Length: 153
Image 1 (cartoon, rainbow, N blue to C red):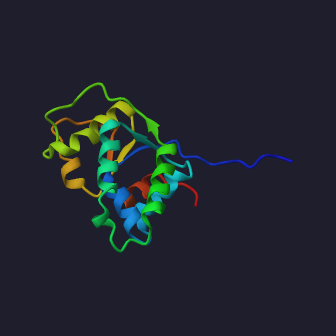
Image 2: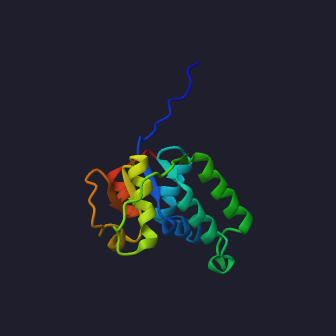
């Protein structure tokens, strides 16, 4: 009897908070597909102190999730699962000034420190407009991520 062969994409991603929230709010969609691929180990999400604090802050806003299909306990369970799949990355260097919105700079810093393949965000306009360019780092929507880095279902 042979062990099943698992297929993994060796793709490291920074998941912007807007993608995580959309995945938890909506009944499906590409944000949820990216999150599921992270939870299945097909993508390697990375996490640092600033992104973790942002996740916790936004997920703690109960008014944001009024009418969500998931209960607070279910959202917490999904978040814990994401944390367990994420690789912790310390950021030792700040790339400033860089993005028009100061609150987004931590995404670039985490991605550079983690040597990530991409930042997955719905905020392409701001995140992709940095003064400093990192040619190996892609800024993608969830749709673009799934197209650029397809993983088996």
